[in-house]
Amino acid sequence: MLGAGAPVPYGDIPGKFVAPNLTPDPETGAGNWTDDQIARAIREGIGHDGRALFPTMPYADFRHFSDEDLASIVSTCASLAPVHREQRKNTFFPARYLIRSRPSRWSTR
Ligand code: HEM
Image (cartoon, rainbow, N blue to C red; front, side, top):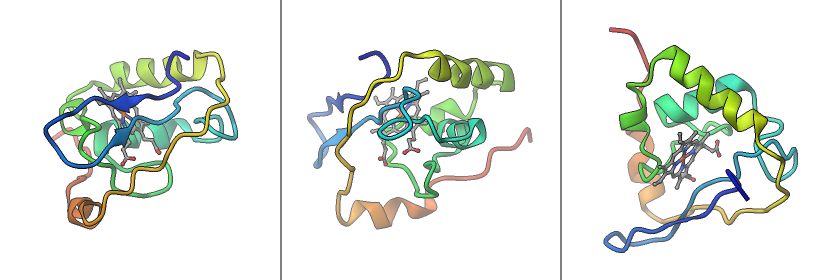
């Protein structure tokens, strides 16, 4: 089940958050996502489908990853054994609207 997603155990905020299936399963995982889509989620907080991710995904910290570290992480995801596992969608109203302005473009400056 490595990389196949799990509930994020936060007791102090409302809502329940589930980390996605990042294994290369094409139907329920990241098998059809491009490297750039995964990289953008990690460093900029935009999901493969263009959605602003909940900040439970610590992309604000991950934006400090170097290009090389990021590439290593993306290729590690691609090397995982595919796991067919549908994950619950994170839809916490109204936070999904409030977080829309949170992601920002990554730059070297
Ligand atoms: C290097 C480690 C990590 C990688 C490679 C990673 C990768 C990703 C990616 C690619 C997405 C976007 C999925 C999509 O496009 O639909 C995502 C979302 C998410 N991640 Fe991470 N993540 C990491 C660490 C974490 C950690 C430490 C947590 C929580 C403690 C976390 C929680 C989440 C959650 C809850 C989402 C879904 C957010 C939403 O649906 O809005 N992730 N992660």
